[in-house]
Image 1 (cartoon, helix red, strand yellow):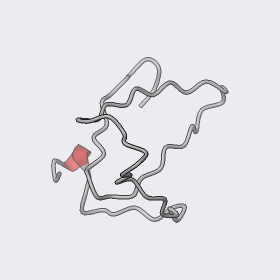
Image 2 (cartoon, one colour):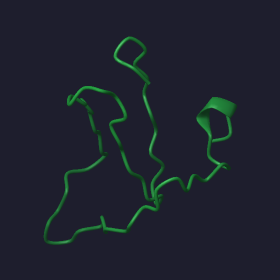
Image 3 (cartoon, rainbow, N blue to C red):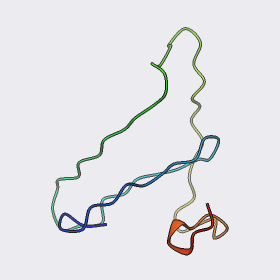
Image 4 (cartoon, rainbow, N blue to C red):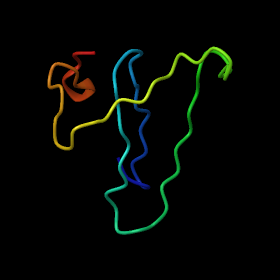
Length: 66
């Protein structure tokens, strides 16, 4: 994904994910959408560490297996 070749990336519910800017610029623009507003009184989002370099190869939109 680049500034010249933008793409939509689907984050599946229930999967831990991380977004890393690998470009040589400091700018990274992301747009997030959720089907409901976050409720701080009843959170359903939890922190879980993401191991660098560990990728679930079963989920790969380039290969069409999502």
